[in-house]
Image (cartoon, rainbow, N blue to C red; front, side, top):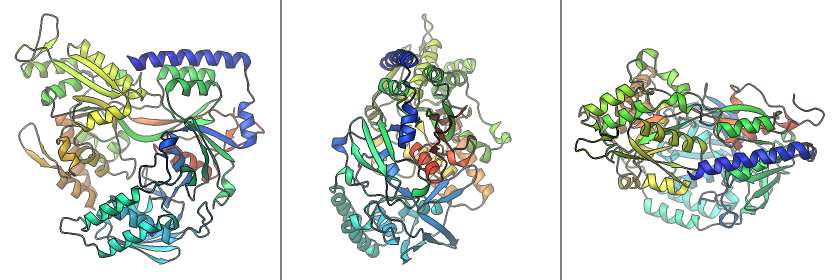
Length: 604
């Protein structure tokens, strides 16, 4: 396989560079950067020739924008809901109204004051571009230069997060042309009985006009701690925002972002001491070699709540048969996958309930979980199910269907991600050893997503979220029955593209379930016991349908190479480490004065 060869080559290159580093040993590199206040990490952004500064129009800025723009409040859903003030200062809720006070004295990087007018500009353009928040928000208005009032038709489990956990990336003085028109449209619009706003055609026309605005990437304006001054295909240099409101706690002068392009160049940079702190994934053998060559490296695991998963397209034979899906899940030995998944991975939910373990244990009792089928390497059960389906083994011990035709399975994955590729490859090998003829289709990332989106994948290994944004069961099951409905064949791709939001599922016994109705109630109920009941209903459904199989629970390895970096808490359960967005974690640490260089002593 291409990635296997690449991984082997990369490990060889890593060992070679590591040997050279050990012999020549330029051990002053970390100290030089520490003394200069330069912080180097990995980054994801599009090729420079395609970048621009309009974040509403797929700017491609990625990590760069993450250092330039900030949230009103940094929301952390677990272990308990926490709102850390950033550009927002405080908020109160009474009935269906949320009143917010934002921070005074904040400047955009071009010197323009940040006020409530900028917050309104964001929400006006969010209205024009059909963002989720306006499904639940009725109105927002400024009651002063630094105070706002949000009104909802009714509150639910996510309304608070929807208006507080927002990235402020829309300076009014830059987006005024579109924000003013969007505000007029919003004032003239009414919500229909279906909950949708009218004037859709006018909003679409204005959105298309906004998307034509593509200012130079280096003109990006933000309130954040760092702004880009140079962008190339390999590296971006960000310099400290001189007018940053929290400048006193930011102890770095520059951020150097090394754009991730391939595994080999990334590993070579590690061995050349080219990173101070980064979070890129890698295979266990490479990780062990990196640890060996970097004995002073410290690693903090951040709760990601993602679920690298095996997904089944229920519209593609023979995976359209529930007995086949259940059999495949019984074949897969998930304990063995833990040995090859990215370091920091934890055990998955063996009932395939959809709930990531940290949340599962909050909503699903041990008594309830005992009623679900456990899928984990029970080949006898897999054999029983396939025979029940009318299949049998041929003279070569390969499974054939009821007509005697050889069964062929295909599994697609994105080759750029080690956990996806390595786990998919191992599962294919397990299936073949069991007699199910399976092949792996490793693809580049864009081709993989298109393959899924077009409904062509029979089985796929990719990421299913575990409620990283809201910490609610609603978010998890929405990712299945709305966002991922076409990936698993719950609906046809054309239905998903047309905006279908209500999936009627047919269970093996022939009964049907209105998932849209359950999602709506799950979102709106204020009865904790009822929320548990609805979560159990979804968990039972996924367990029985076997349309999804989490392989591991993902944690992000924050790898800190520079021995002079200090100040950060070492307890991985500290909420400061929560989240899949490594840029957000780094900014959180810097903003709170918990990440800086101390050149007087190295970490032990």
